[in-house]
Image (cartoon, rainbow, N blue to C red; front, side):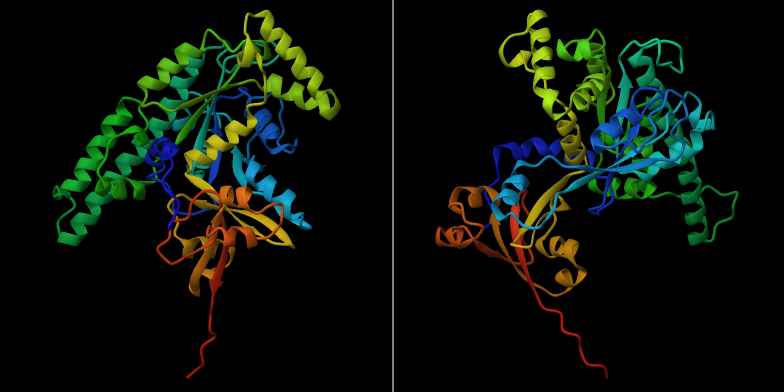
Amino acid sequence: MPPKKKKGDDEDLGAMRAARFGRVKNDLSMGFVGLPNVGKSSLTNLLAGNTHAEAANYPFCTIDPNVSQCVVPDKNFKYLADCYKPPSVVPAVLKVVDIAGLIRGASEGAGLGNAFLSHIAAVDGIFHLVRAFENDEVIHVDDSVDPLRDLDTIEAELCLKDLDSLSKILDKEKERVRKEKGMSRSSEPPLSDLFQSAYTKVNGLLEKNHPVQTGDFTMGEVDIIREWQLITTKPQVYIVNMTQKSYIRKGSKWLPKINDWVKTHGGGQIIPMSCEFEQNLVDAGAEGKADFLAECKASAESFGLKGPMAEVKSVLPKIIRSGRSALCLQSFYTCGPKEVRAWTIQKGTLAPQAAGVIHTDFERGFIKAEVCNVEDFKKLHAGQPSMAKVKEAGKYRQEGKTYVMQEGDICIFMHNVSSGKKK
């Protein structure tokens, strides 16, 4: 039997709703979207733990999208790696694309707009990064810091681009129906009720500068809208880049206003962070990290924060996990003396398709999956890099083709692919 549904599973419904228009595949990516000089390249560098994306104080320093593989923080994976101690350890990663900044008029080609919008269209989810910090040394494309204006600018440009795409979709559908029914070009073709319903709802949202993914649609409408590949159907996570001081004292005059803006534009997750703090934490190194965090805690206490509220820590793991959640991704593990690996799949994936992520032959010749959940393994394995104790406790089970994979499953897939004789 599959594991019982956990209470926290209901929290995933919002993410599933946002990802309903997405592609059904396991190699999905999040893209950083925002105005120039809001911290996209800096944050991409920090998330990936490297400096291969050029983080320069210039509006169009990132012309081609920089792609980074960010290791997914996973305590269970680390536990398995420490237990088995194999020579090969392969964690799950999240693909993040650093997309150059948009400016007002990008939907009409301003700046490097059209190229950037095509880069946004290529990713599956959006990290919408806004600037809430003052710094005279980092120029703002509009000469002043105003996150609400910036949010309006980006959302408007994305919606305008989708409105342009929508008009072309309507013309294309009309032309298709005319050809199908043998009608003249001047005649007005009868469009299906489902198409008209989907079109009307989407057009209404876009004209209000609301992302399409926030709307209420029937499953039939979702199937149609998915084919349109609109930018604003992608799930969004809002990230607010503040000064280190604001981040430590857990407050900014802009946060309540940003929260209200997001609520009135369909809602979404908001993550306050500070590239300044994160970079200083990295620069402190392993030896100076504890002292730096202690200084930050003392600073937080001087602002009147007490107990857990005074603790200051990196928010980078949360950003990576939020990206995976927005894309409805999860991990399963394969463990052995040679390798421990985390494999990425979408939520709702069946066992044969999960096996296919390892090798296509595993899906084609799928027989069964031998499964235990990582939490059961941690409780029962008694320090052994083995499933023996788990099997004794009856927590090692066999699942068939209809089994829906769960987060944290440890799996062995049985398969058989016969070569077949040529006739």
